Length: 324
Ligand code: MTE
Image (tube, rainbow, N blue to C red; front, side, top):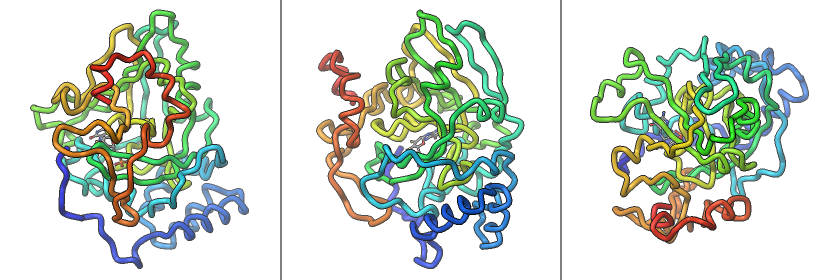
């Protein structure tokens, strides 16, 4: 994950969907109470993201009610920036992968739940969505590369998926894996990366209230470049933990080695908690570049979520803390 100087996401102001437009659109959709039909109406506004949403069978589920307990603390990042400035190495090792990611076929999409669970199973993503309580949460999103956004994710609490999976008492970790298909993801032909993209959390982290399975963004189904149909959001951790397009949840006794940790454990540790006091070996983590304003702002401990999660790390030794 190198910092690129090229600002490929920079847009003319007229192209940026403002926060006000987003808020108005939410109100219109809510007032109509017709998510699916309203989505097709609004696609005539010319938004390509909306056109993509139309093809998604879950489109009628959005927008979902907002959980007001989760607010970003600063204005939302315009949708156009959040959906065109992405990391998704399966589609290229640069930020402009949004076009290439459209090759990903997101239906049918089956998720496997296995390992230390009462009963292993496979479930289609739409069946899973039907079992879960969807809500919208505004989270800060801080990449290890020292840029950040504020985005309205839709989805459900990861702890509800853990409860649905019924892990055994042996389960200490939850491992998540991304799809693997070289025919749609050219990045996966790059043999020096340890595909499939893999991430892990402790069970305590996975069942923390903040851990969120994301299925939508800005009141619509999640765009492919953002990790459709299912990605993780753990806002107190660096962005690389936020694994995209998940096909497998495995419960294990052993701590997994995640994708970036396998490549370079001294730069991308398992914990990866946002910490302004611990430098990345090649740059400071004390500040971050807000993608909305381009200004540098101070980074907060645990990305400002210390109250919710600091207790999870009280027992960690000093050496492990260094990898935060
Ligand atoms: N998931 C997969 N499968 N592949 C990736 O390359 N990149 C990670 C994470 N999830 C990545 C991934 C990184 S480094 C970041 S910062 C976030 O996705 C970026 O999410 P965004 O594009 O929605 O901002």
